[in-house]
Every structure is written in C-alpha cells, then in structure tokens.
Length: 398
Image (cartoon, rainbow, N blue to C red; front, side, top):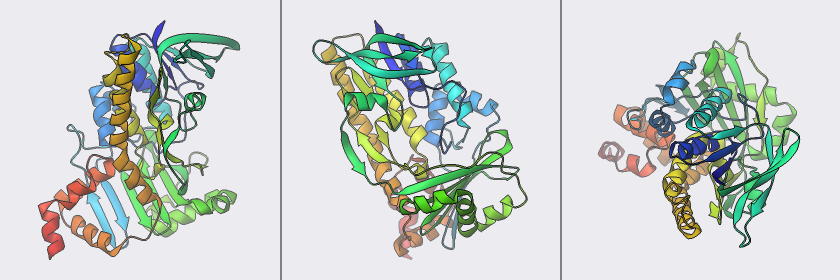
C-alpha cells in the first residue's frame, strides 16, 4: 500500500508529493496533463512563495530558466503612484513570474527526483473505500487501461474543479459570487517588472516572464463577461489604453507573441479541507479571484502545512492521522482568511475611498511605508501592519 496518492501535479500537488517523498513516504503523483505544459495563470509568485522555493532548493532552477526577478513594483490609482520594493520574506525581496510550462516542470521534476512515482495523462474516475467508509485509494484510466491504487491518504490537488472534492462531496464552508473576468496576452520587447493599475471598474497588470516576454492582464467586472468575450482582444487593449496609458504606449509597435487567453470563471470559495482518508490542497480546497495573484504562494504554503502535519502520522493509526488532518485544516483556514477578504475587496473594482487615497498619498512619499505596502500586496503583511506604523500615523495626523 502507498502512503499517499496526490491527484494533480501542478503548483499544489507536485510540492506536496515532493515534500512527502523527501520525508521518506511512498507517493504516487497523478495528473491528466503531460509536462511541460501550460495552464491558465497569472504566473506571479509573491515573496512568500519565492522563500518556499528557496527552502526547497528550487529557486536557482527558476532563475536559470531566464525568468527575470521582479525587484521593483509600481502601483497607480487616481493621481497616485507607489513605486518601490517589498521588505520581503527570508531575504527574498523579489517576486518572479515564470511561465507555467517552466515552473510546473521544475516542480514535477523535483517530486520525481525525491522518489515520487509520476503518472502523466492519467484520469481519476473514482475513489476506493474501506469497509468503514474511509477513503482508501483511487481508480482511473491510464494508457487506455483502467487501474486502481490503494493508499493511506488521497490528496486532491487538482484545481478549482477538483475531481477529488467532487467525489468526496466536500462541502463549501465559504462561497461568494464571482466578481471579475480576466484576459491576458504576451508581448515581446516590452520592458516591465511588476506593474499594477487601478480605475473604477478596471484593473490592469503587467509582469515580466520567460523568453523576454511581458504578460499583460486585464480584469473586468463579472457582469461584462459576455460583452467582453464577444470582442475580447479589442476590450483587452482598450482596457490597457484607458487604465494604463503608459503601458499602452509601450505596446505600440510591439508584437503580441501568443493568442489571447481568458476566463469568466473566477470562483471564490473554501471547501472543507479534509475527511477520513482524504485532504485538499491549493485551489481544490480554496480558490479566490486571481486579481491579487495569491494562488501559487498559497498552494506552496498549504503543501508545507499539510506535510508538516501528516508526515509523522501517515503510517500510524487512522485516528492520529485524522487529528493531524484536522490541525492542517484549521491552519489552512486561518492562513487564507485575511487574503480572501482582501482579494474580494480588490475584485469589486470599486472606486477607492477618500480615506484610502489619503493613506496611499502618505505611502507613496516614504520608502519604508512603500515597502510595507508591497509586503501587503505579496501577502507577507496585513493592513494592520501598515496602519499601526508610527510613520503612517504621523503622516495621517498632519
């Protein structure tokens, strides 16, 4: 019997399998895709995620791929420009935005190198159960044949539309309406690091990625999805022009190097994170609008949290494993709650309040406050950290 089967081998599943295998466990890693391959993504890994890559010994591989560091950030709203860099996490002050065919291949390779068995092009169609109703494995199809494998723990890391979550009927513990739709394109020879532009009803971002390309993202209110989808490229470029004119100017005469991609299915939810013999990590258990680009960093953190909790109990009795899964779920829920609320606030694309604009004017004039602000953007600080800064309190009192 295997110790764990991980369903989904991207930025939640591959690190989970890698860390379990490094801890000496027998792990099977399954994915319906073949690697390297792309998937819809903002690409951005904030500093907490970069620190995780460094701890795992994988950051050099991301750097060696030619993905440039995002060592400066720029945020514009109204007449305000906040520009600088974060304080960072564990010495990592830069973010990175690697293409997913690059990042996911690195993660999958690390899982395999650690000893996890990888099966690509594999679909899970059902779960196996013990006599007491405990999940005890999976069944599926691979290379045109059916298969079944048994394990002490089945981990769903298979994304927002998780098959594992569906098969165990994992209930939603939080669910909110969809707020945005998003489209993105890649451009050659357009200088950028990390850039964010906001107007009421609009959000535009740009990040430098692999192969000298820049990713340009546009966010629209969800109720415009059918309109935008009908003429997506025009709407995408008009949104850049109207919200980020400086960026739009840099696109003139440049080449769009791939087709436009987009989605209107930006779900916001948390699902119950565990049950007898199963657990969910990454987007399978918690998903929020991509506008704050927290997904990859959150997936890395959840992978570490799950493995930290279950590694010592995975081969013990089921009651001990269940207790550790419950601790993981509590840790996950506490970790994602603030970022979830903050993301939904941004995704409303509402007009900024006068109070918020006053705060940002104070931030833009001070390098220390700017660094704290970009820590907030990265999920490495909260609004409380900024609001309790003596410098900010003095500035707002003037």
